[in-house]
Amino acid sequence: MNIFERKVYRRILGPVHDNKKENWRILTNKEIYASDKKPTITETIRLNRLSWFGHVQRMEDNRIPKRLLYMNLGTRLRGRPRNRWQDEVREDGRIVVGEGWHEKVHNREEWKKLLRTARNCHILHMPME
Image (cartoon, rainbow, N blue to C red; front, side, top):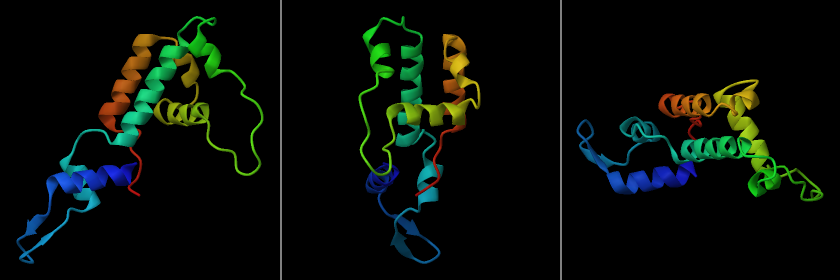
């Protein structure tokens, strides 16, 4: 996902003229991320996933989205287990808040504040691939 995002940015920003070497070159990954202060696609996806999880967690237990979230869909195939949505949410929550993040989900204002802080501080920023 990050590779696609950098490719799009390179296409939009175009080549830059290097005055020292007197030639044109493409932007490096660090230059792309330095020029753009917005969260990356991966960060946005992770923050939206945590936001949705908080919304579903605060729902009543009889609501369909909450029942589907904790529904067991059967057995897994052989080999390495594929990451489930819940596994990704658990990892993202651990990165943003640390241990005990499940309790903070139930307080809507505190949860929104944590997600806003994570977005502004780029806590979920993934290293360049």
